[in-house]
Length: 400
Length: 116
Image (cartoon, rainbow over all chains, first blue to last red; front, side, top):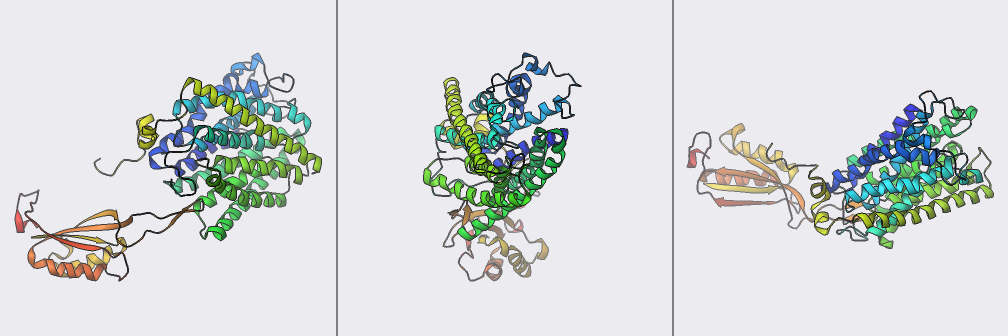
């Protein structure tokens, strides 16, 4: 559990590089900071009251709360977590990393124009008002979606659909970048090797994300399910990477490195809700489908005229939905696949999408009331690195 | 004294250096400055693709070679650069030759032809 938690934390710098490579050189530091600062903001929020909200004693299935969990005061060092044979503190930390990476995923949609203070406030409020309730509904044994039988192995709905849809809402709320021209390659990535390295770190960390999530299953099956989740994670990522690469090659004539990196992430996202519930062969199918569909989805944005800078919705939102629905259609445990299960999964997706839309609109309105969401035209033109942080990532090679 | 500024294809630099070595007295020690630069003439840049959208950069990467020469060496040097840099395709670059009023070696303060 401890090593899985550490692996999931490594996904955050991975995501930072993945996103950082895709922006222009004048915004690379602020983009990387968006991910890193979630480790700081949510890292504090989770210990103070986030864990209590998500995993405290259920208040009617809607939200958790225990005064004794505020600041984790009530969790002694030797307190075991349910019947899992692990200390509860290990579980607290593992779940905390999920809460950290989710708002970091959203940052990709609003990169290169969001104001840093607004993003900080958004992260705090969104994690508290959207993430914590959703995690409680799906993952707390007393959560209402969990009781209905909605399956989400490692966070397809809680993490990826919620982040992807919130990203889309926020991108539309905040408007396109000043240099963005729909349908044209108007803003070019400045460092694709960063993006590939980031995708590699994400893949590595995802083994902790998915295999570690077997902790949610009853004791005896948790070990084998972790191995299954490890296998399906690897399989789906490979299939999706291949599918995206080949589709793009056939469609546009070039196998691009950005496509390969994006395909890896699409497959990892789609297998997340299904990881411990489907066979490796099903994982191949889930991966391949998500690779092609997400590749098409990221190109909708030029038709639909919204500027999701780094495709947080096209990959995490769309990939998350594919995975959530296919979980119901392909699972063999803990229940057999059935139309009824697909229905339950669709309900889970609907609730995730609805909560993300309403929650993000409310939170962004709240943030906007305190501080503007968007950087000024001049700040955007000169780059947020120098105008917000007073730093540059790259200096000219003149002088020492 | 003349100043030669030649815009060449980056991959032709070694061939240009080889040709220059054969016509200039100093052999390995002839003086030259090389800069990377971008520009455009008739050649078009190669298409880049991002998310299925094509982008053609307006500027092409080149090298600019700068050499200061005494008059007798100008024509042999121009011929050497032509031999080294020419491929016959669009985008081979240009050579500019301009009069050079003075030249000073910073270490010794020598001026004019001796400093070139």
